Length: 54
Image (cartoon, rainbow, N blue to C red; front, side, top):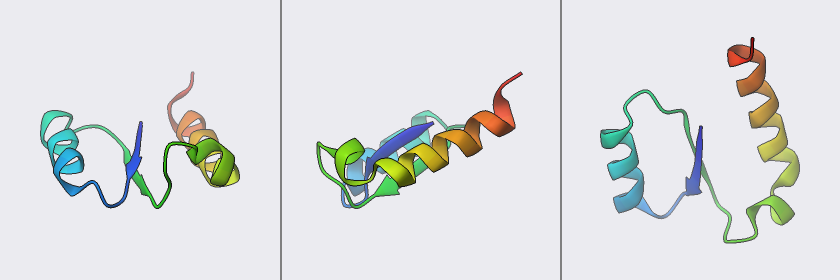
């Protein structure tokens, strides 16, 4: 699972190419994403763990 800035197209393309099985979420957030988008990120992490945790 990877969170990246939505506007960083070059890096996001590289992540998708290098990690084809990764779950990538693009957020309109800066360096303090957990402070500004904490609830959204927590929901995505909970969903991911619900699908992948044993």
